Image (cartoon, rainbow, N blue to C red):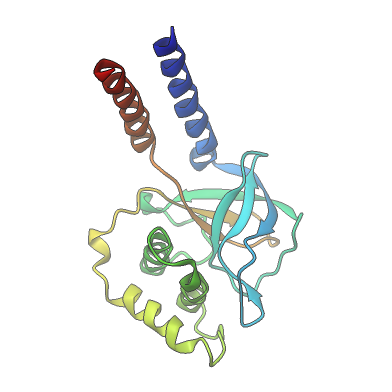
Length: 203
């Protein structure tokens, strides 16, 4: 009976996670800016920003659009573009190399200390607009990440989980976010079930 409950729980968890990333495949979604992570650098909030899509869970996102302004609580319609599709026709900037550089930097937040996230965000803003000024105190750190993005072999990076959230109209900001692929979630779920079964067998 306990085994059955665990399997059901694992299945529900996997389905829930898949539903949470479902907006990634939708053509147009309703986006709401719900908050910031508290990080601020040179007087500007930086990654993570928290947004919802179609009223779903809060998703941490990276802003790549420096000069458009939004406020907490604002909503707008947006297109979702999977970066690995290569079709950037619905994005704000339309430059594959720049988006891949920005996505590479976003992926670095998986393993980088949060103290560097502000520099990473400013480097992404610099990629799309070199006039974005991080301030003299932060320039060296920003340049470090910018150089990494410009020199890495982008062809060896897996961008399959990166999505671009682009406003359909004039209002709103563009964001990037990193989402686990369904295959990864299924592997996680089967791993949990296998781990539980092994422990039960050993008991």
